[in-house]
Length: 116
Image (cartoon, rainbow, N blue to C red):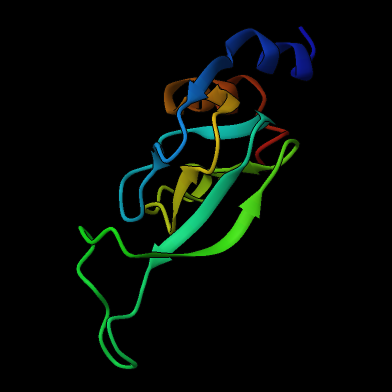
């Protein structure tokens, strides 16, 4: 089986509502997300002042990037095992292909040349 076909066989299509948190900062990897339709905001907690960060539970977030169809996210935490570095929120209703963590781990075993 070819590498692209193997990916197509395991990804799931998911739809997220406007303002739905897709991945959240400091959480474990959730997968690799490829945006098909819609837009997503990459957000980080706002600063309460010049020297203090607001609590993670605050709704105050700064958008640092807008992702559009063809963009992907989640790759860094998925590849390194580090917690997610920023939250990603659907700016509008958004559809993504998602390669889950377990499928990614199996993919690395089946196609080690891709991950080296």
